[in-house]
Every structure is written in structure tokens, then in C-alpha cells.
Amino acid sequence: DTGVSQDPRHKITKRGQNVTFRCDPISEHNRLYWYRQTLGQGPEFLTYFQNEAQLEKSRLLSDRFSAERPKGSFSTLEIQRTEQGDSAMYLCASSLGRARLGIEKLFFGSGTQLSVL
Amino acid sequence: DQQVKQNSPSLSVQEGRISILNCDYTNSMFDYFLWYKKYPAEGPTFLISISSIKDKNEDGRFTVFLNKSAKHLSLHIVPSQPGDSAVYFCAASAQGGSNYKLTFGKGTLLTVNP
Image (cartoon, rainbow over all chains, first blue to last red; front, side):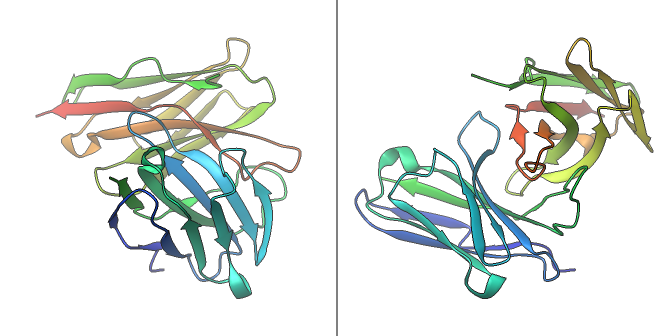
């Protein structure tokens, strides 16, 4: 079990540029999540995949954000035309996805810290 | 509208003593609660959870208590150790197909002094 891996760990970009983050979940996990954490706040849900299907998107995810999970393995989160308000820690998590009821235990990666100048 | 509230931004305790972290929630649909611990530059790691059908769950030094009528839960760490120093997040989820979506509080920074 190598854990959830995220790349890059840090990204500094200028306003208006596009950025892309990658997440590699735990291999046997079929659910993958993106959360965002801003300073002084807890993580906030952005979106969720069951295998390759994106099943829910938060209202926090504007049209400038797009997430994919081709072949149900790794996932990418792209932000187009970045704004200073996008500066945050972007966390990826994965889970087994077998708990139809009960607690779904999420395993988080170390995150990508985005700074938009 | 903060549905999960951790009203204490920080807590400092002496090694060996009890740490009590509190969490309140407003959404009565929440029926599973989790605590996550986060060290700097790392992602949150799962610590302990509790279902709303229980009022207590224990795992080693960690115990979570749930008072459903008060919409309040607490995490007890006994005895506290310096390695417990971290940010602790309370999180909640609701059934009905959304058990994957966690709503987090803002976190409480616990410092355990040697």
C-alpha cells in the first residue's frame, strides 16, 4: 500500500495561466475524490468519481475547473485561467467504495499547494 | 453556513493529561462522524469514527463520544503524547447515497507539551 500520491506538491503560477494536478489513488480503490482546503478552513468537497464516472460536482467547482479519471485509475484536475481566489491546497482522496451503507473511510494524499500570483 | 463547527481553534495540554476536542453539528441528516488528524505538509489521516446508533467508540488512547440530542461529539485522547500534536478535523456524512461526501469543521490545533 503506497498511499495516495499527488503531483506536484507545490505549484506557483501567474493569474490567467492554466494548471493541472495529478492524483494516483490506492490501487484497489475505485472511488476518488477531490477536496480543496483554504487557510483556516477544513477541506471542502469538490468532486467524486466512481471508477471513471464523475458522479457529483460541488457548486464550488466553477466552469474553469475540470476533472477527469480516464480508465478509472489516476485523475487530473485542471484549472483554466487561474484567479488569486484559487490559491488553496488541493487534496485528493480515495476509498474502496464498497460501503453502500456506513462510513466510507477516505485516504488522503499530501495535497498540491497552489499559489496564484 | 458552517454545518460542522469546531469552536476552539487551538488547545494546549501537558503530556500525560487528557485532551478533549469538541465538535458541534447542525445538520440532523448527519449520521456518521469521523475524526481526522493532520500534520503540517501532509494530508489528513483517519483517526476514529462513530455511527449515530452508538454513543461511544474507543480505539486505544482515542475515544469519541456522541450526544445526538445535543448534536455534539467529542474526541478524548488519554494519555496525550507530544506526537499527538496536530490539527484535528471533525467530519460528518449522511446516508442516502452520499456517504462518500464528508463535511469538515475548521479544525483544532492540539499542542501537547512535554
